[in-house]
Amino acid sequence: MDFGLSEEQQLLQDTVAQFLANENDPNQLRARFDAEEPHDETFWKGLMELGLGGLLVPEEHGGAGLQMIDAALVAETMGFAAAPGPFLGHTLAGLAIALGGSEAHKRAWLPKLATGDALGTVAFGEEDGSWLPEQWSVGGDALTGTKCHVPYGAQADVIVVGTKGGGLALVAPGDGATIELFEGVDRTRRLYTVRFDGAAAEALPDGSDAASRTRDAALILLAADAFGGASRVLAMSVEYAKTREQFGVTIGHFQALKHQLANMALETEPARGLFWYAAHAFDEVPEDCERMAALAKAHVTDRFMHVAREATEAHGGIGFTWECDVQMWFKRALFDRAWLGTPGTHRERAAQLAGW
Image (cartoon, rainbow, N blue to C red; front, top):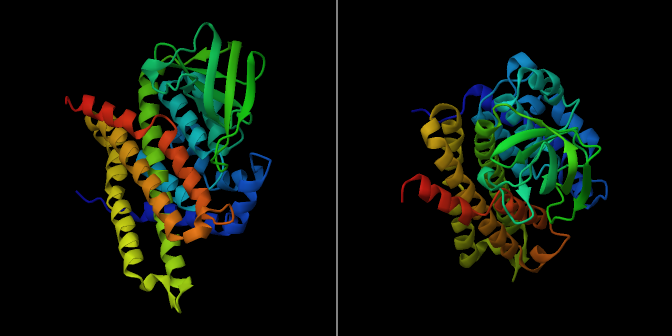
């Protein structure tokens, strides 16, 4: 089996990478990270003009109709650049509606999500730390309950809410929903707490099947983002070792640091195949998808967290400061590791799915 990228996939990744290099260089990223305004609409519009809003939206509804591996490659590139914005929640919302919505839901929302004329997100986390469909408790004909860690909940035009019994429902923020900013550490992806008090909701008719598929997609995209982030902090550490001098030589001459950087590379690069296969399985090997998505999320986000710690140490004292750019990726690693459940949660799921 050929697991190399096609020319089209390489072009997609290169195009996104070039846009981010031009529009999200370290100075621009730092400004967005420090800004009080949570959402840079101009930057987001640029991403939408590249077609990233409709990667997984079917062509008949105005999207690109691509596969999960393509979305994962974009997520990897976004992670490498620590690109801010609602890409994760928006992509998942479009996928959930495409998989579980009625034809009316699809006609109403998918074309607008594909072009970026509407912003979508998902609300899966709950106050007790539950994330998974079988754990959701928010429900009722008019939704009641609280969802936590909702990406860009205040900016969204539609929220796909995980409901009691493992279903999905659409909520347009307004009457019956109170939305508050949650001060998370990753300022490249802002989170909100959404409290429902009799909010009007439209259940997706195939929401139960779509919920598990959307969960798996989320795990894969988080793993891809984590791989990109780990690759970036490794590259930053290598570059720092080539330029920082101690005792009259660059610190890259020191054997201990050489070993540390080599170990970081060994932690990172082999993980590529894990999230690639999980993304491939999403579309082509459904019997493997759930377990491989859980493994990819558990392993790759854990490795990102470890490599980010090592990168902080490799930068010495400056690595522990706000002024060092590594801290932005370190905090992104915290998000990738925790959102939708910790590595321990998904290792246990993978073991159960394997019949252990």
